[in-house]
Image (tube, rainbow, N blue to C red; front, top):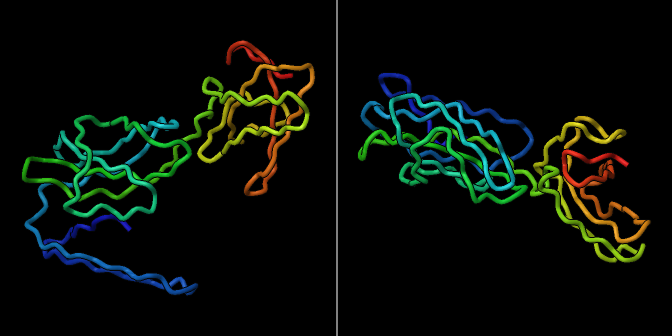
Length: 220
């Protein structure tokens, strides 16, 4: 549910309708009612998140009033929605680049307008997004462990959660599939590649290319 609902009626009337999905008993719902003067500082709307990376993302919103200062919150998904009195990170630019995020992690983003030192909006509805893995692109490929034998006693961990699609995927791979990148320097004329312990169990494709830079690689 959104952090807040604001009545559009001059009387302040709010009507809630609850319907059952007939599949079980939920935990319930609780509301705190605030009787305030007419709203003069309106909460931002149309939140979007773009240019998502492994540790950064661009947060965008539409200002519905005249505010030029805001506060943002980026919380782990399923965190409690922000309360009226909860403060956030002060920002003065829209869009805003948030940093310090964790790779392959899902967050929910909220923003509120700061119209004056004594007048701020309610928190906006939240929007959820996931950061990418560190090695989502060729330029950030992870240095892979190379075994000196064919037993593969040392393994490279990885995740596809939050990964994006790379244009120009190797032949035979799905052109719409998301991908991650690894790089290594061959130590022998023969190396064995194996994909182990895939959870959940899905089909994975992989390709092998050679080249000194990401702009000059050639599929083998």
